[in-house]
Figure 1 (tube, rainbow, N blue to C red):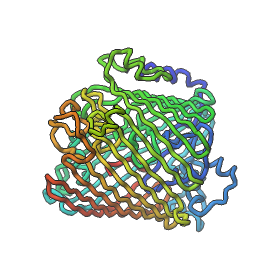
Figure 2 (figure 1 turned 90 degrees about the vertical axis):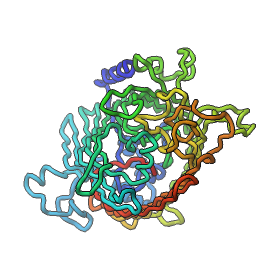
Figure 3 (figure 1 turned 60 degrees about the vertical axis):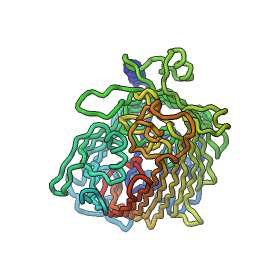
Figure 4 (figure 1 turned 90 degrees about the horizontal axis):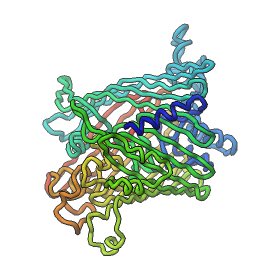
Length: 571
């Protein structure tokens, strides 16, 4: 950790000459896909890569400026997207008088006197202070969900989530930007997430430390209670180089999943440098993660160093490469990996270590201003001769993704469609030395289910009007059984030691102890005011395999969220 700490102190020490709005731009529950639509509408710009995420407030602001400069004739959906982005950027003042255009909280005349002068002076922000030398914005965070599943174990059909917290962001002297979110949670997971948890060492999706939670009201004994926090501080070092330090989830890829680095796992400590020059975006990422599941005792640290190079080959085509190394040292972070322009494989060989190295390739192609196709290719290990021989050698560990998005499909401006295919060979992301597998807090850093899988997913969304949206998805996942014990290891569960396999050849994707899972969802959302979302959701979950009884479950749930950030889930 000492090397990572020295790096952090280095760029904090030069903050007196820095400026920028380089913090992750939030996407809240019920927002739909306005960011992706805006990114395509704005078109390409030097140094901005769609696959290197999360996007920042600065990036989204530049999109709005570019759209305005281009003078594009906007449809109704695009105008709604721009209005929503302006609210998130704190560019919209509250209108004091009620009008036909002001809805919900902002149309009410009940806020008078001190309350009227204190709260929601900026649309979408409960507290907004803009004074010389400081800007400060704050919001409550709420998420209440309650539902029921059929055919649940022990007759306990209730699923719920109860989240309360707050989020703040601000600017000091136009040079330092900060952001943090704190929230307390009690949840009972749906059955498919409980299945995932059971396979992955009782981890809770997206959560590190937790406590067991019981409720006599809902007659459950298998709930979870946890507290979480994220936070970042960001600066511009030069015109082309920026830095962030924080606790969060950087990501690579434009798809529903990322097979290189996703944001599914619990947030982790990271330091990040972004260099944007000409048509190139180069990111260095240095992280501290946890080996194993957090309990009452100390959990040892592990580290991931990564760098991503993205290049805009044409106005439509972007390609990139990511090199990642997972390692563990008795004395903390290995300072040799702090070199921002070296190949990590060379460092690994000089150290005489057997660190876990992975290489990822990504590409995305814009089709006009309303569509995109994309793909990823990851190599954990690779032997070309073995691939040609097609003998199913265990160490040919690769993952492939292909997908596409179409906004304004079939000439209907408010209809969005997307589809994606993922294929991951057995043993990918795993390692013979457990502490350096590609996981954090026993949660995969790429696909949530691990390896040895094929997945098809389709999503649609239709914006009925500015406040109402209907969406749905269907996912089909075929995989080797991740719930099997570690010996013999069939290559599906990436927590297991790769050396526990019983052979070296004849490993095919999702052929051994195959489990087929199907998940479907239909959701209706209503946005009563900025940041808020009321939802009604129907879920279907089906599971079939040769070794267990087939399962089919239906569920209905209702929820209310306020300023709750969307996160990747098991499905």
